Length: 294
View (cartoon, rainbow, N blue to C red):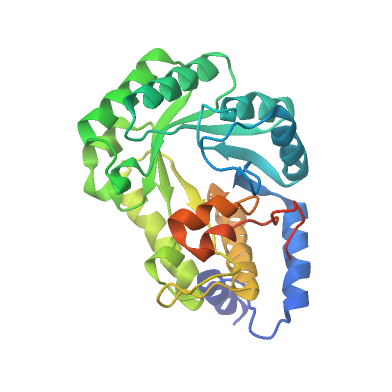
């Protein structure tokens, strides 16, 4: 019976029904001490947003907070001070998944790509990501994105080059999947309105769908998370308890089955309310004041 019980728990995640919030918080801190594979790095304070210049001091301060708890760090841009993140992360012994932010502005795109290539050839990039959810937003064409990916592959060496998007984009766009050395799939049961009860199963299915089209390439979950405040999205309800359970389920799965996951996110960032509504400001494991929330 114990094997059957373990099988059920592996599917549904942490047995939280009879645990108090305080007990879940204790498990959170135990998991945090054990460490994660990766964290998405959020550097902006309350008065900043993408395009605001980041300082070395604020990057260094936040990396010092998270470095005991993660092996990898993911950054999203190579301009406006974000290009400092990979070198500082390496200084602290962290591996880096470094993104060039590709959008509608060709001039900015060129700066992003140039800096990503420079950082890669300088030895500060362990995995390069050419764009994040570009196809989802429709900022450039698929052909343009493929040219950017091929350029970074051509002008760098000894690193894997990929592209980040929702898991289903790799099903729908096989040319992009084929061009990538590694598949970087964002998996958000929350944003598909999935209730917490089924969220682990749902994320496992997202991952399996990416694996199916990857043709043997490594698949990394480049983002997943659950907000602790804000408006519900269909059946997905933000709450402190739900965010705790989702984090614990995700990390248990990552550890037990060797799934490489970058959790979203490290710190709360107020600017995200412009894109996502009130939930946007509450995805961090640490709050806006750089204190753990749980």
